[in-house]
Image (cartoon, rainbow over all chains, first blue to last red; front, top):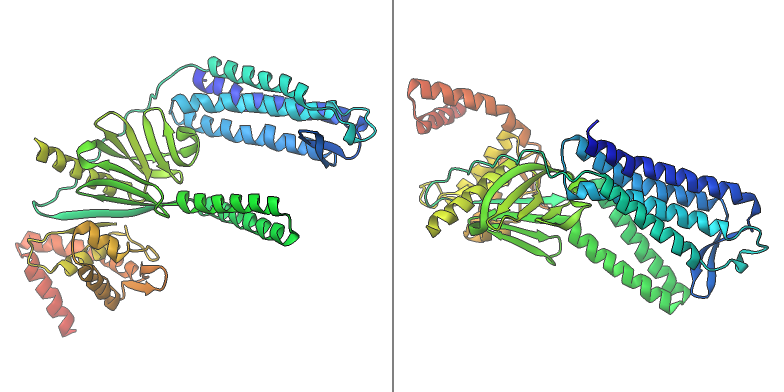
Length: 329
Length: 118
């Protein structure tokens, strides 16, 4: 097996599985010795949140196990397609560090409550943090170092051939990029839940809590309106991407277009997530996996935006870039 | 959706815009349920009058290729599949006409005459 793949497998899949299994094993071992309920949340003045003990192994499996595994496997899938790069080395390292940190933290919170009469007496979690945080950081750095530094081995995408336009002919390509229906449904539900929570809090008369939750709901609504849909326009002046509500507007002027290609993009593996992403050397508006256009700017930076019918969009932008260069010369 | 117009052409601008939509429906790049961009956006991008774009959309609606829906704007109808089904016939006819040295305008006139006869 290729070194990049085997090391990423170790960091992004094996480490989270082992760390989670170890944490859950420790939690189950101390389960008989615990107060019921156990403390699961600490404020400045000691424990302030309590749950049944069995919820802790479940949370461990979800946060220290599932979440890092999703990060790790998404990187592995991209590596197996032959992709290499900064983000693909970072994701498995983050997965390894995160699982060790969260596993140690969650298991530690149960270990310190062994033999207590009531969870009210639980000591602070500062000491657990002092162990869990460095442990996660060290494992994360080691996982980063263990993986080979390889730059993208995939061939650069072949540039689109410019659309042939008659002199005087005007052309525009208008398209939209949308999140997948599932992601969209999740965001809409989360936003609705926040508003419902805010309404309930106002009814309950807790002014501070209701103000905070209303703020969260407003923020979520703005984010949902901004990052779930983008309008893409290509014309003689270049490329314009505008988000749903016109909060964000990104432009690549035609004079700045060096080359354009239609590509397939994978947000999580290549840009560490979805939305408007910045990574070294590139800016990307990635709202879903799949077809996208990649613009190489004259500065060498890349700009990527997901669109349907990417080949047509790429060829028109290539034509606009060519026309702008011809006009300059 | 790609729209291209040639202001120097003798064909009216609204008809050129409508042709772009028809062409993409027949090529299968526009399918039933796809949304056409707002007329104002198209007018701005192509630097033409808003009424020119609205007239094109109106024409497509009269043909049944586009439906106007409140709140969603102009949406491609199921009629797009019919245009897509005719594409192979159109390509074959165009190829045959080229072979025989018959111009596009003449072929269009023949099709029009044939439609009127039957």
